Figure 1 (tube, rainbow, N blue to C red):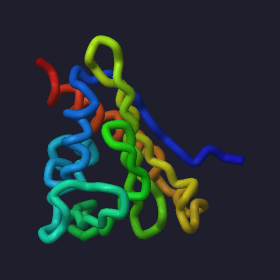
Figure 2: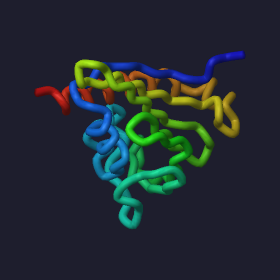
Figure 3: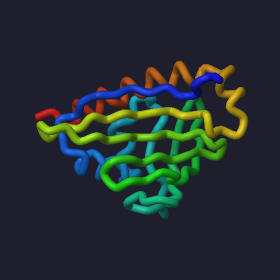
Figure 4: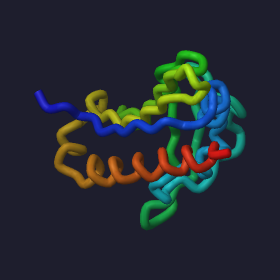
Amino acid sequence: MKKRQVSATRIVAAPPEKIFELLTDPSKHPLIDGSGTVLAAQGGGPERLTLGSRFGMDMKMGAPYKILNTVVEFDENRLIAWRHFNGHRWRWQLKPLEDGSTEVTETFDWSTARIPLLIDLSFFPRKNQQAIDKTLDRLVNLFQA
């Protein structure tokens, strides 16, 4: 069976609580987005994400569009994941380290997609791997002293 995930990990010089605060605030997502597609959080959504939260984002990939997400995994200060309409997930895992920094892993997981074969055949896994690397680099830079 094919592994339907791409991910990357970085060490961020901040405690998990600070990073999680950023990840649970949709209005802050454009600050770290390495794909160049996340423009802004749509109005009327939650200020802080929790399990089951639904939030919309204004996006642009060629043309502007809107996407609705639902938080489907949540463990305070350790894990958050949201899914799009097709069922694929964006997952963030935070592991505290003894020196006060955090190991952060971001994953694009399309094993849960309604039609994962379509994503297998597309450019999305490769493109999302590149975006994850850029996003994590931005996150590292955001918390540098």
